[in-house]
Amino acid sequence: MTHMKIPILTYHSLHAPGNDYHDNDHVALEADLQLIRQYGFTPISLKTITDWLNPALEFTLAEGLYIGISFDDGCDHDFFDFSYPGIPTLKSFYNILLANNDIHTDAPAFTATSFVIASPHARSILDQVCIAGRNQWRDNWWCDANQTGLISVANHSWDHTHPGLDFVAQHEQTRGNFHCINNWHDADIQILQAEWYIQHKLGTQTDGLFAYPYGHTNTFLTEEYFPYHASTFAGAFDASGEYVSATTNCWKIPRFVCADHWTQPQQLETILQGALTN
Image 1 (cartoon, rainbow, N blue to C red):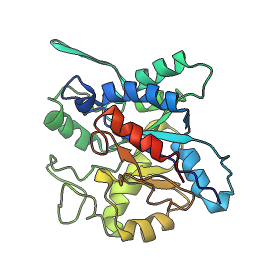
Image 2: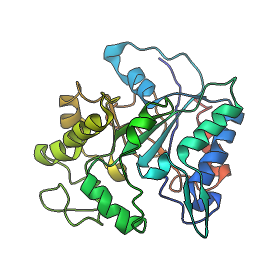
Image 3: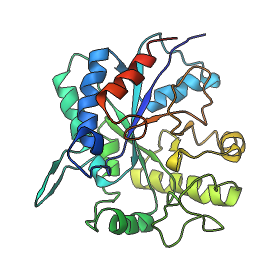
């Protein structure tokens, strides 16, 4: 039995209210990739991690230092640089990955999974509510990103049960959490319908990965819904700030979230160092 501890780091391209590490996930990601290289971690895809956790696949992951990267919510800044008068250019997550990989051509490339909100209606409203209505929460980049080999697009629910929406796919109109998705009808819309839409836009199968909005899980989803749909999904990710191990439940895969679990490089170093100990 392996005793590896794998951190998965999560960033939000929408989180950039300032220009410093603690208040701009783009600045943080660029610095963090360098730090991760210095520590000697090997980046692996989230799909590789779920394959490792699936006993039916008998997939072997050699002993080593591994790390996964993911992005949540899927606004355009995952893939496109952003320029606006009076605001410093915001380098996209994709271009940050690309630049780091171009520098370190002799090392394994960083890749990431971008978990996107599927509903076009929800994204159009959230664009108005969250980013000043600049039409920057689109799905026209998903296919291109998915074909780069650096970013794979995956499921972050239909509408995130976001409090900024006029209507959400939840029978009691509960917003601001995902614990409330605790029945088959709501879960089918939030999870399965979102998966179908994303696959349609990509024109191909996805990796079958899901990230719980807000990191919120419940026993219905982890013990009933996802196991029932194991032919469609390979793993589901929360935000509990723990390491992935060989015994991790593939429907409750933990992640560390930038600005929540660390706000300074020294705090990320602590997380990375924690993966070095059994």
